[in-house]
Length: 196
Image 1: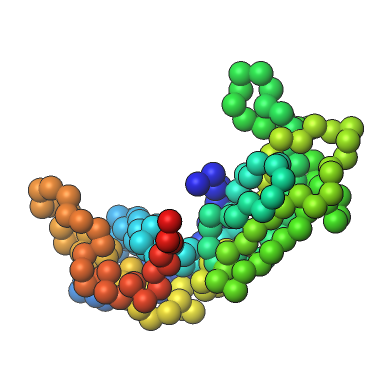
Image 2 (image 1 turned 90 degrees about the vertical axis):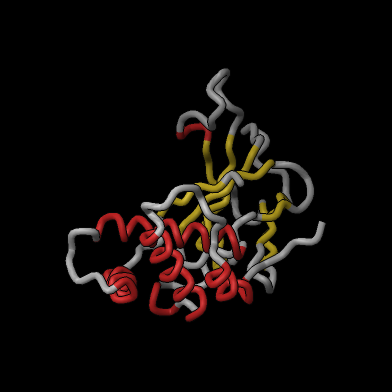
């Protein structure tokens, strides 16, 4: 996945308070590590379900080739911008300076927002012939819920349980499979499977 999270989801103090209540922790001494465990649980939830739980601003780079190209992040709420990217400067492996990036004119790209939250993009008109374009950068908002309090209960509770599990197992040896069965059971209804 060639995704960059431009503005990550913010976990509010209420998320940390829920985790601390679950663990029976009353001091602030472990707030930093517990917050890191919650952030990790958020990533694990996305990896397991195939859906970004909390809204974030993202960008994916797709080839500027004919045909539809699907975004790998789901569910997409809105596409906010599509830019053309010029060829990589020799040897850099990146899009280089800001001059290599330019907004595509209106009507140059088509967007297909799927009912399942998957988006596809394709170039419908040739871009500006005076500019070389090899990739497109698609900026969008994705996520199941706008904030922690609006997450479905199963997803939110699973993240709390996973962070608590990781906190309790921090001294044990060996890595257990993630997520544990009790968390997987909470997340399974939200899991998106792909047939190949």
